[in-house]
Length: 499
Image (cartoon, rainbow, N blue to C red; front, side, top):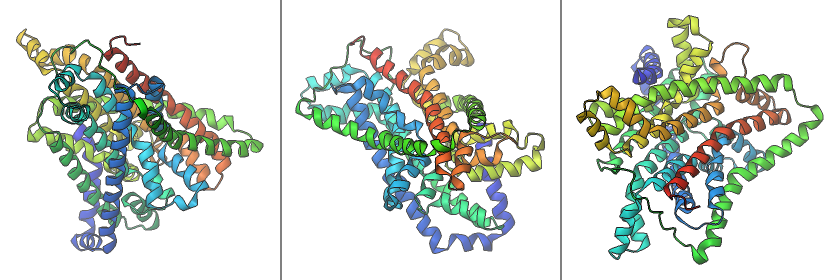
């Protein structure tokens, strides 16, 4: 069912392409612009992913394995950029620094907005790795760097790969940031094609190319994981991992951590405060702001519940089985996440009008769009959590007579509970910020903070849009804070009462 829902938009694209005929499809594929769109989109995704992995892994290591001053506070701050929609951060940069438009600005904004996708799972993995393995490596004469590369990095590689996959897919599917930064990638050109012409064949063909690229990336990520086992039996050593003393490097580490926080959080906050102050003379329309906030919470909660319910069986299968069928199922569920929200929304409009008219422009169809778009975020968290849970405990439960469903209910899901909860919070957070699908599929008369923000900025009312932007950031900060607190708790528990 999860794969079928994820493939529904692709079915719509294929129908559009078949109706247009081979000549129209080939005409779009062989254009020079299509080639450069592939180069631009892949180049941007590669640059953002590489930078996000470096920042996420370094911050995770500094906050979990070193004596960085105030590391408990930094572990919370490092995850907070998830609360800032990337299109809000892009506006903050381009409205003050117009020269930031283009590749450089797009890369900077997306990197600062997406590195927490790597930071959170890597920090969780570092807090759960068995310190005894590293101690054995050091006792055999290996240096700290060699131990990190040969032991620690191997244990957190699945978490880093899952985060990198989310970053790459987010970059390929993001519409708001490239549009505001005026950098042509697939999403911006597809949206322009939909808006500028009644012939949607070029947009459908370009979307299919984007899906092919996405499948290629997910296949590469799956192969990079390999078949190595990363789980351990039992709770592991109860000893507190020995913190690495940074010594003279502490000021540099502190400056690097603070610099990332200043660029990702401080700068957008200052710009938003500036627009709020400028808009005070016109007052705040509380009669629209409060209902928009309530609608945002309600639809994002429903979207997170639906996506998590669909993601759990897929994540468990992906973690426990490596067959071709399971890999194809997992890859299929990621396809919808790479499609631009506008394409998924239009596909569901097509589906709703023809086959599901009673729920057209009703909440269920909007929730379905959220599930298609953000289910992979929950799948990544579930898969990483289950893969780190010892499969031998499930084997013991089966040997004691438990049915597969009983093992799943009593062993697998409780062990993976924190990861599933993190995936739920991540989907809810992302749903709050989603824009194109919400614009087209929201129930009649219902507005969210994101749609109100877009409506105001579309007519140049930046000061009037500021309260919605601030409310959206504050609302999104709640699940972000809970995720970072849960992460910090994991670190504390792993250290066995160090503090």
